[in-house]
Length: 422
Ligand code: CIR
Image (cartoon, rainbow, N blue to C red; front, side):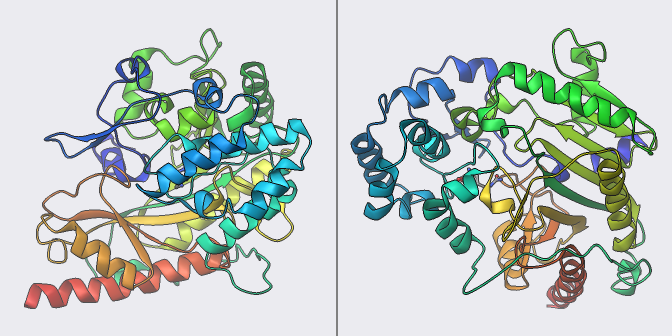
């Protein structure tokens, strides 16, 4: 894969953008993050780590938690805040002390970020069952679930059907990406892993990679690891948008513990042909990714599902919830855990990149999410290059996600043409 092609993948990898270096952020004095917008328009956040976040509520002082939640309501009410009701509080106080501590840890990301929209991260796969009185209403509201429900899975996605050139002949060679989030049974989730557990998990996954039927190579970020990337190599992989960012620059990830012990136990496996990647130790144990240049959405799905099957055949048991599908650290990814996107250009709808809000609004009407080139909070270029994916994660099968992307793109490109004629 050419470097210039890889550069197109910017939006396909990073979901949070900040402009301070990690070392500057770590030294920030404030306990709670301050937001400040500079001329770059990028949000800056001061960074706190889990121990400091926990220390605010020492001995599990739920009065303090409630007081902090009340304070946050004046700024922004996250789902975790909204659903920490009086009856949830009473139930929380009835739990064994160890479980109260664990529940507090679930809420640390929300308590430590005034811009949290969800505000909770699971600490173990069992949290979704054990803390259901609190977490279930959050999942149901986020995913707009009403009544009885159960997540179904279907990877039967035809090749030759969702062909982008049928929408527009110019969509001949498009950057197409699909990823799934996965966690593995028997391990704490990244927000509560010790450094040893992270390193052991990395070693466990290396054993899996050795038995994979797909050829590839593992690169580690763990200091002193035999396959450790040098700083230069890691920087190059980041410039190529293959490797994930320094997690300690994101206060949601630091305060919840997800970024703790960085960079121990983190790394990336890359297939020989560089179309398949597996991240270890980011927000979930695993992010499994496929990127293909072409015009058939079914091809990228096949690539991803081949990799998932190879992993299962090599012995990985993914954590699954009986109702809510794949178990993810953040409840927003429950269901399929799948995000599928393409990079497209929408100069008319985005008014040459000056009105990104217009493109986002129209995409939303069509059940799609439009992100700028460098992720969720980034700006669009003058060609209106955007990463477009269906919004739905839960209650749709993997196959339905692809269908929604294809149909949504058909409608979005029609609107783009109309806007050009106006
Ligand atoms: C929040 O509550 O706003 C953050 N914890 C992020 C929620 C969006 N989910 C995600 O990035 N996986």
